[in-house]
Image (cartoon, rainbow, N blue to C red; front, side, top):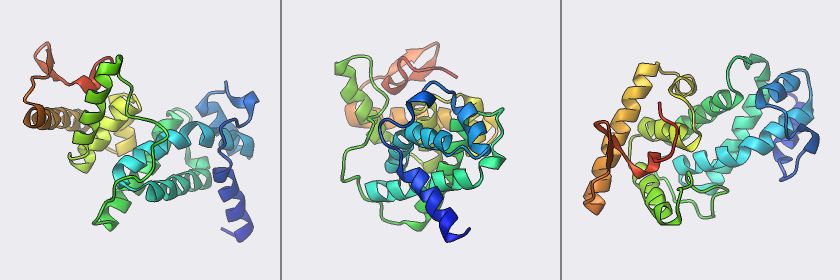
Length: 221
């Protein structure tokens, strides 16, 4: 990739301001990706505007460092732009994008032995609770979730943070749907144990399945 091309791609990633092209705000992400394939930079810039904050939150949770997360967001979008021709419109764009980000996060995690806490506020908070009294419980649960294994945390975040279906998570994590369901089950059980160890409280139960506050009101499998 030449210097001029690299500069052009970097400029697309760097232009994700709060407004973007107003005329593209109602266009689906999949249609924007199709247009980006045809060379429409404005469409890709709109994709960056939509997904950069969410990707930043996800990656900051994993790297524990705001600046490292920013670098990974940049790299994710640069790789997405470079490989946009490979995107298949039968898949959700967010699934494809987060698959790229997830792979970069795993690579980063393997390189870094010391993970620092984010030093600046995130663009988005953990999935919002339905009442202010529940918000602290949700935030506490996400903090506890960071003590889970890499794959368990990723599966939980994609499920409840990004509201992806099991099928979409399987695509993003390059696993079978059965494997994802097992990951989610183990993540919930381990998170429940951590919750009880810290608070000594019983989580809600639903039809015999453990149901934590973090999943209350969220889409099921």
